Image (cartoon, rainbow, N blue to C red; front, side):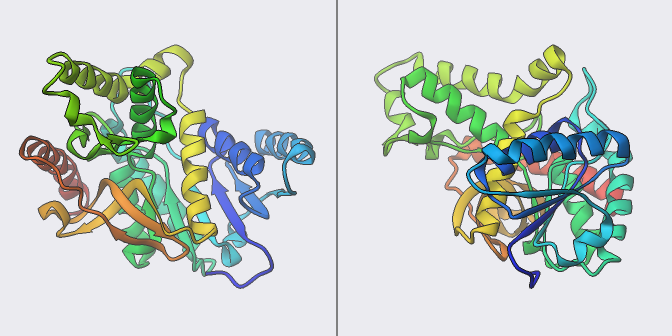
Length: 315
């Protein structure tokens, strides 16, 4: 990690997601210095000014600057939100070809400046692009994290909380697998304040159907939001800030991210959404959730979907 006073994050890509992430970082005072890189320099200048004008109301000061790749030399984290945008009707996996090339170019510029920190990747399709960043960087896989299913899990927890009338923070549930159409809910491990979600299945015949409907709404939420406003931003911005805090503050916390698997779930050499322990060294370890047989079949299918794409682009 970098050896400078305070902590520093370099954000690459100041579109809707990047700016929402920057806003969340500042509001929560997670970092001391945020450098932002974007190809649209005029718009970037405006965003940096706008963010700095709001810093006065934040809990503590965050220094926000227009960055260059040279800033990566002493950065604790580089967060990638750049890439071709997902268009209405386009799946995340449709973006692979365009965005792998973009990731390779970005990582080349970052590593040319002796970056020695943690990568956090949010660009879609995030599982494949996190793999691309890892391969291009030459870093240990533990130092490359994908946002994975952090947003999907948040959506699922929010909707379950609405169903049960409890705060989402009291809902403990994960969406795992691809951040995309083949993802699945780990219902068998989910609980609300320690009470297993599955406990209601025997007493309420319709409860399982309601949970499946909530999952479908979770899975398809991005398409609904993109159709309504053009992109998702606030939810993923706050999710990225949460992962950043886990790294910067050395929290040793379990979060749903895209992590590199080495035999967990019977999967090798693949980044995919699962719970993982995160701290200042990156991903300490991926956690294999105890899925039931049906969930394991769905996870295997999701892993195959990603692996087929990975093999096509990386061999």
